[in-house]
Image (cartoon, rainbow, N blue to C red; front, side):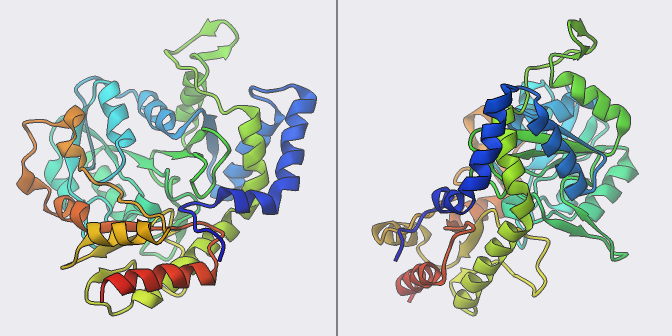
Amino acid sequence: MKKIQMVDLKSQYDKISAVVNESIQEVLNTNTYINGPQVHQFQKTLEDYLDVKHVIPCANGTDALQIAMMGLGLKPGDEVITADFTFAATVEVIALLQLTPVLVDVDLHNMNISIEEIKRAITPKTKAIVPVHLFGRAANMEAIMAVAKENNLYVIEDNAQAIGANCKFSDGTKKKAGTIGHVGATSFFPSKNLGCYGDGGAIFTNDDALAHTLRGIVNHGMYERYHHDVVGVNSRLDSIQAAVLNAKLPLLDEYNKARQDAARKYSLAFEGHKNIIAPNICDICDCHVFHQYTLRIIDADRDGLMQHLLDKGIPCAIYYPIPLHSQKAYMDVRYKEEDFPVTNQLVKEVISLPMHTELDDEQIKFITDSVLEFLK
């Protein structure tokens, strides 16, 4: 059996190496390393794929979130509501801009931000909501947009883990995650569903005026060289990373389907087990693209299971072991432990298994057998 990886980028590269190498070579031949043709090609192709008017490439996913907030003109002291159960980058940029982060609990069943907790957290100072499409599952954007509209709030989608996922609305229509709010942000970190070979990110919006502002911000506030019209940053997607993304974007749906197929096999093996709550996967799953495949282990030794898997050469991880409200950088007297019952439960239960495009049946069987062996 091939060695199991948490994310097998080498095997994925081996299948597309000729296309990737040719795309990178074009950059080397033209010496256009910043804002070259490959960047513009990727921007346009991604706009078409997402059916969004504007994609603004940038240097990484954290910058994408920060620039999105800068573009909306949020001011120090403005409150921004986001989920307690996620990676720190989401709250980090809120704090960096001297906005006030307001962490709220998540829904136990989908691990995304709780709609009821959003409503409960809104005050006269609230200006924005940042839903995170966690682990690749689209948040309930229809409900979030309704709350935002009712309270005149911006919605900034953190889509770092769910590019390609669909959000379905009650009228039957679908839109890609990241394109529904006023602005969306994503990451092209190598392990993402659409990943480059370094850092990269992008911002999405259908708002023409906002897109114009964002394009200035990513490039030192310039629209014309040496004319600085807005306060900006230096955050550009370099041409070599765009070249990699141009090679991989046409395969994104195929990659997501491979992840969904692997997730379906995992969940089938765990079906009905008294100690395992596995992700629910419908026959036509398109709302979850499985950046991570995350189990909840109940009434059993989750940490013992993790060590058992590691001892058998199976990589696994706990995303995320410490809630944001308990992190030293983000502790606040406003937060009480009883405000976060679901998050505090999840950090004790979750474990993520290997998930990538190259998982094969032999590996999946070995992984699932090993989990079941421990949880007899």
